[in-house]
Length: 202
Image 1 (tube, rainbow, N blue to C red):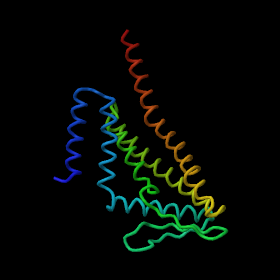
Image 2: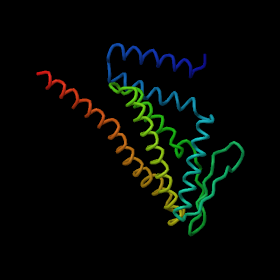
Image 3: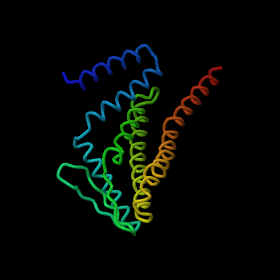
């Protein structure tokens, strides 16, 4: 067996053990973190990662065109990362669209948090999964568009501010809003339903 397979088996055994023992906090942490890492490790360099990188670059390119910001998408060499070229007022800038820009990490984490979230029915879980993944993907496109806009109007000197500060800040705020809607709101609804049931039985 490969190291990945051994790790997956150990992770699955521990997750089942914690769930059977109803140790919910360590179960949830181990299940979500382990699933995310195993999925990312398995998906690296596969058609899943490449397809997501392509979709992200193409969608950012199309929306940039609608916003009047010229961009180009191409591979700088066979088998390498996609490159998004932002044409600015003072030249052009190359953005390598890799695993960070693709949103694969965030999508895997969101899926894991929802898959192993206790107390959700199948239909409700599926609906939240589809909506949450779609929202996270759109948010990632917005983050990329913010970076593109800064590079177009401000030039290469704004790359740190655009990517590390503004882009990540916008992404964090919007993702927290999605997580609140999906997880905190769902938890509050479950608690409210249980309180109503308890009060009606008195």
